[in-house]
Image 1 (spheres, rainbow, N blue to C red):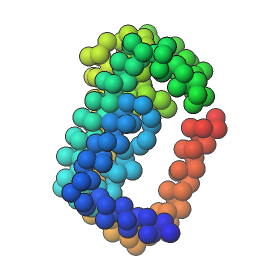
Image 2 (cartoon, rainbow, N blue to C red):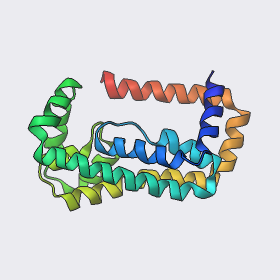
Image 3 (cartoon, rainbow, N blue to C red):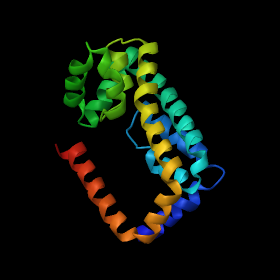
Length: 189
């Protein structure tokens, strides 16, 4: 089953509309929900390693555009939109703790955009960081993440594809363990 999913992702990654899907997922990730766009960027870059930097740029730009929307939600609609959404998702306490930790430390914002378990741009808007600061943090944090993936797969994409093809079961086991760890850290702790 996992092998079929991998094969399907590789086929979909080679489609002409794959970049649009990457942009959409990156925009949603930057704006409201943490859906890792690497789910698309990885197979796309494995299928076409020479285009990996382009995919990183598409993801970074779309994520930054999503961050602008999230920033304005945090700045002007926090009480009406973001606060009830965070409460519904049971993330309000986590968000409040995050906001206190990074509100006074500008150096932490790019890291927040890179690692935050919720849209950091909403937090940036809610503490009135400033749109330019939020965009810079998004570009450095999220854009850096896209760039690292792109550079690694540009260099090792073909080798990674061959490795995955020959050791698929081991790669699948490691991916399942990493996914389970992510779910535990993200939702259980």
